[in-house]
Every structure is written in structure tokens, then in C-alpha cells.
Amino acid sequence: MTEYVLLTDDQSYFVEYLIGELVLSNSISEAMKFNDEHLALKFKKMLHNSCKLITSVNTYIG
Image (cartoon, rainbow, N blue to C red; front, side):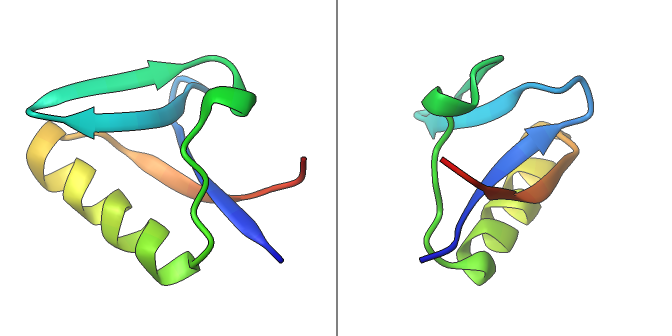
């Protein structure tokens, strides 16, 4: 099954967004994994709208 992660412009990974607090990590193993590319794209859009965070959806190979 293919999984996806969100990678920021500064090469950190999206971990979580909870109660307005954004958590990023340099470690892909800590990144939130999405089983559905469409859900990853929705999170990408939400993070851009709420945090002005620019991310890309990347395939996770783990």
C-alpha cells in the first residue's frame, strides 16, 4: 500500500496540527503518513490556508 507524507520547502516533514499548533520534524519516520493521496492533498491545502505553510505531497517508502 502506498503512503504519503507532506514535505515543507525547508525539507522538514509535517507531523501534526492540533489546537492551532503546528509540529514539524526533520525525521521522515516521525512524519504523519497518509494512506490516501486525496486526504494528503486536503491536509496540504488546509495547512496552506491556516498556516501559510507550503508543502508537497511525497511518496513514503519505509
